[in-house]
Length: 292
Ligand SMILES: [Mg+2]
Image (cartoon, rainbow, N blue to C red; front, top):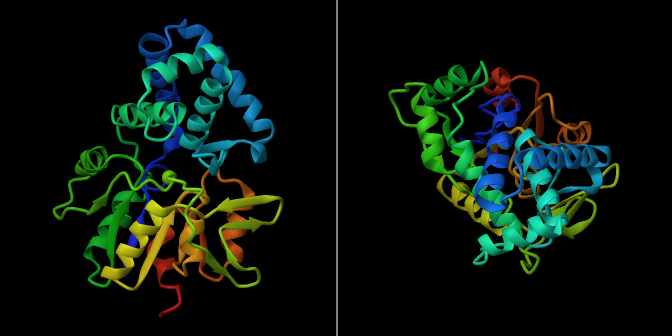
C-alpha cells in the first residue's frame, strides 16, 4: 500500500510555527511589497483574522474564483486566507500587489500569498509532531507499505526538514502538488452514492467542498497507477481529503487543535474515512481499511 502523507500540520505541529510565518510575511509585505508601516500591517492582519473567524463558513482560500479551503481548517490555511482577505480588500495594498505580481500564474493576490508561503515556511525550523519520526520509520520498515510525502510546499524544503530525522533510506517527496489548483472549466465529475455525478460535495451544516482540483487529481491517478492500494493522510479536509474520498481512496484525517468539528464528522461518516486523534495511531488504523 502506498501511504500518501501530507507534511505541514500532519508530520509537523504547524500551530506552533504559524506566528513566526505570519510575522515573516508581514515583514516582507511592509518592506518589499507594499511599503506600509509594519505596525499598520500587523493591526490589519489581527483585525482581518478575527473577522474571518467570526464567520469561517463564509471565508476561505480562493483560487481562480473557487473555494480551495474554508479559512479555519488549518493554521497555515488561516494565515493564507487572512493575507488574501487583507490584501484583496484594501485598494492600496491590492495596487501594490498587482504591480509586483503583474505576471501572475493565478491572480496577483494568490501568487503573492503563494510566494510568501513558499519563501517563509522554508526559513522556519522543523517542528515535528512527537510521533512523526517513529511512525515514518515504522512505515519505511514495513515491506507492505510505502510512505510518500505529498505536499503543497516545495520538495527541497520538505527534504531538508526530513533530513533532520536522519533516516537511512530516503522518503519520497512529491512537492508542490497544488491541491489548491482549482479550475472552474474542468468537467470531471465524481460519483456520489446518493447525488450521482457531482463536482461540489455538499456537506451537512451548509459546507460544500469543491472537487475541481485537476492537478491533485492527476497526482492521485498517477499514484494509483503505480500501486492500486493508496491511502491519504492529512490534517485538513477540503484541500487534501475530499477528492480522494470521492475517488474511492481512503482518507485519514489527523484531528488537531484547529480541526473544525464538521471536517471530522464528514470524514467519520464516510465508509473510507478515518479520524486519528494522534499521529501515533496511523499504522494501526491503516490495518482497519478494507482490503481491495
Ligand atoms: Mg496540512
